[in-house]
Amino acid sequence: DIIQRGGTILRTARCLEMKTKEGQKRAVEQLKEHGIEGVIVIGGDGSFMGAKAISELGFPSIGIPGTIDNDLAYTDYTLGFDTACNTILDAINKIRDTMSSHDRVSIIEVMGRNCGDLALYAGLGGAEVIIVPEHKIDIVRVCERLEASKQRGKHSGIVVLAEGAGKADDLAEKITARTGLSIRSTVLGHLQRGGSPSMKDRFLGTSMGV
Image 1 (tube, rainbow, N blue to C red):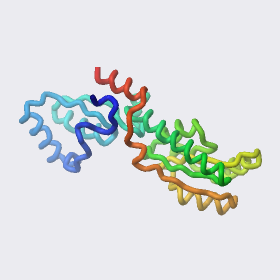
Image 2: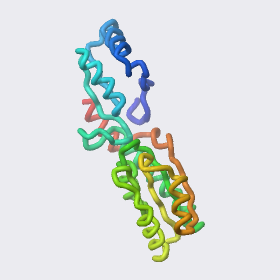
Image 3: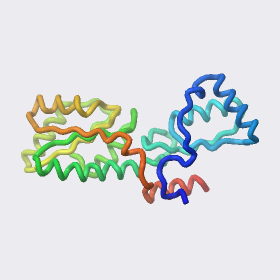
Image 4: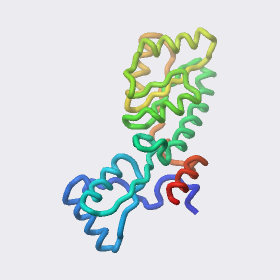
């Protein structure tokens, strides 16, 4: 009865002790003491660093890529990414309603650390401008695109900004100064990290479990 639940039923999170050699050795000792023969680590970059550390100490570990950021290069998609994308897309749709009625532009800041995949994939589903850390921001081009969109008769604009590329409030100030457009900013934050998994994530999690 867990396939429909988000988050972690194990209630696990990062452990600062695992960043030290002493903590890593203690972890291996604890695992052996409890008769555990190997660990399957579900997580992202931080979790996998821990798995790598205990593996180098001779303890078997397997990594299952689970992070909304989709920032692990050796897999096409990570667990949680599709669900987070759909959460962002739902927010874009709802924010668009308000922006349209008030003739405004909204900058929506999304998570992803230094990877722009969340912004890119969700933004393709409903944004005029997508800004990711993999490419330097061209503020002039961003402004030109928003102004051109308004001239074509659009009553609103959506800019999806990856958190690794900047802050929504800072970008809003720069665009307003250059264009005079009415800008609002929204930081989605941890809203993106929860919720019932999408069909794609349920299939991916089940496949990896098998």
